Image (cartoon, rainbow, N blue to C red; front, side):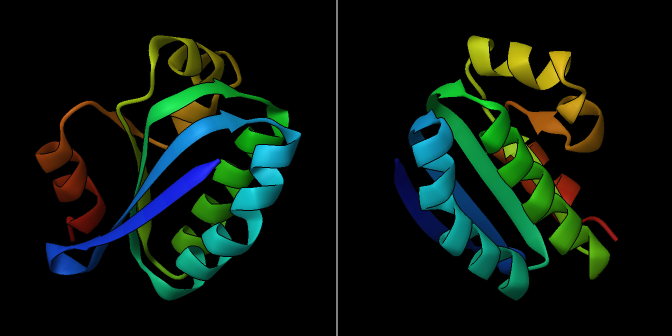
Length: 113
């Protein structure tokens, strides 16, 4: 699992993930994502490099979203692959965490008052 973190204008944290978010990938995400959730109020998670996501990966996305929203922040998903989108929609994650396919629109969504 590759994790790249970039701070964008307006206090937005862009987290680009690549690889499989299976049991091992989810474990690798745990510490960095917890740190990001605790230190940012606007988080975009770029899933364009994720080919597979398992239930543990969904749990990780839900955890960061709950942590960020509990302090009044917002999380959005960016550019998931079609296979990952299907998993997110089937499991209702897309109802909890909005999905965007355009960076500018996603940034506006997590920074809107």
